[in-house]
Length: 112
Image (cartoon, rainbow, N blue to C red; front, side):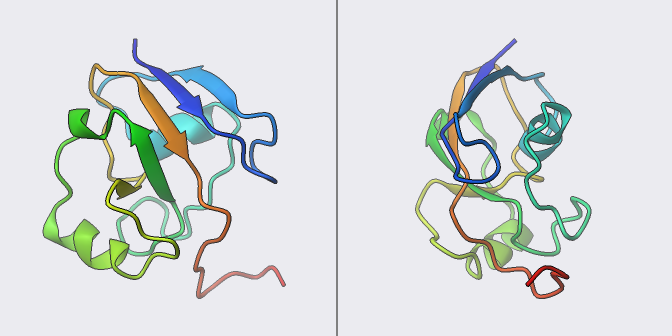
């Protein structure tokens, strides 16, 4: 099973985490399953950018993003070359190091 290192995030994962992933599962589903409550406003349907992550290591093991994911990534806060929507990034066999950006753009957020 691939190991996923989640870098510290001020509110979602202050201490960081090391979790086990399952090949074939989305990164978003894996984070949620391990109590890392990443936003996913569109319920993982590739219709927003709230689950944006930066894959610091292991990005090459993920399938290339499709055109729809690329279109949404262009709207993400803090976009970097290794940015992915975690709902679309399917875990392969390699270990990953993931950073959850400090901010997200959520047009329908009910939080102030």
